[in-house]
Figure 1 (cartoon, one colour):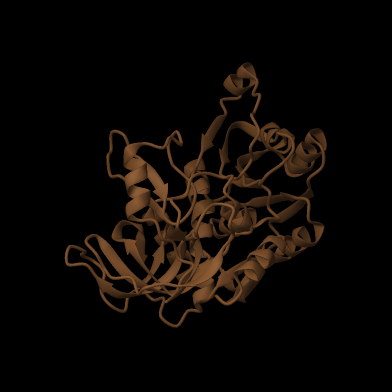
Figure 2 (figure 1 turned 45 degrees about the horizontal axis):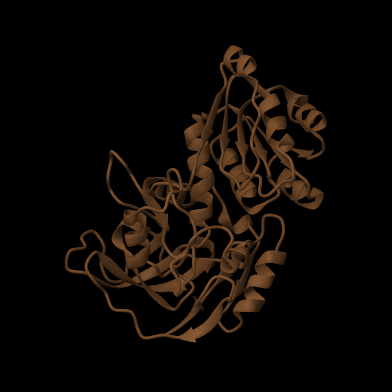
Length: 354
């Protein structure tokens, strides 16, 4: 079969011919139908974002069709359409350890333990391939997915990250929600999910004014706010009143001020959830946090139930994945595909269809 492989961090992805994978205990053999290519895939291939056990097939989840299941795997059958969630847990409730299969990322404190190393070595290959053997725990069956364009199904994992963040905020129908980084892929997903969850007002905060205009056109409840300095951004968010929830989906930024602008815009008793790629420390005023009774939470990835909930939201018609721009690439030119992914700004997605 053909796949995008990474021999060593920094080598770049190459198109390789590999032996056909065979199912093994605990595993499911998938035909990959589509896989999202995140905008920062070239950075992952370069190696600075964390350990990956090379050589490996790279790839952060997607959607596939079951070709075979191991004898000890129950609940899945040949022909099922499934989503690959990427997140694999050790199953230890007292000390859960988690890795992203085929990708960089370690849960918890981010420590490389013997358990983490064993999980990464056993289940190392990702989804940028024609076929893959995946651990059963990372797969979610998608009832009713037959006939749905696979490139749309490949977005479910990204939307589930945003959905988990909103879920951890405790937001309910009628809340006012601000999404920081709304003009990016993750933030755009957050805006759509907040609308699907019946938010009374969704404040979309971002730098790309063209994308802000497109988000505003989705629904009259969307209020676009250009990202400026801390005071100006907070004033824009609160123009219609303080918000109940702030979802921080910002990527790499040079200052913590955009995140702190969201903090400033919270109503007393409000909640802020961090789901993005900000690599800045936050200086939060102890007394203000206490007296306003604010909640600050982190949210990383998602459990399988969250992805299934997103899929049911799509099936029910409240979430339209067809409104998201998708550009499809094949396996032939990995370097070109990664360049396209890096250049695809705003809320658009690049999807590999092997």
